[in-house]
Length: 113
Length: 113
Image (cartoon, rainbow over all chains, first blue to last red):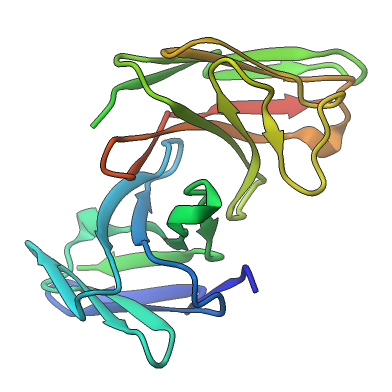
């Protein structure tokens, strides 16, 4: 019930392309879905987050798409750049559960020139 | 977002010893969390630390192994006790903002020999 499944495990995209990372959850009580970006040797940084009352949220080149009925959400990185090369984690939490984050397994993104 | 610092940033320890990790936040926060990130893996919640009450531990983590202090609203410590090589990980603290976002510190990289 608490799992968040993330795919793919790794992703290689050409510069200027679109990177897409998918997550699926089981617990319908989850009501907050953030994405984190982590560079080697650094802590995870909050990138963008969505709540289930909207189906899409965009911030610059980063977009979250949310499908409540399918219990899936995805991160789209438009015009991917080499500086976007990092590990991305999706996560989920529920307000009544102490806001504890359950993380996906992570996706290593490499953007090639 | 909150500015979070951790000390030490990294350490190499001998098995059987203990290490105390400090987490300092630049603003008062109600909820602080401690996570473990094993090499190449995702983040796992160890415990939630609220000021003025006992920490709440997740399944698989116990107070004797990971004692936590939360003396005020800007500071917390996590001790990794009686260490073994299996404790080699990155230990991360995070804080919850008033908007329910979670921000992470830079992490403490622990190697146990």
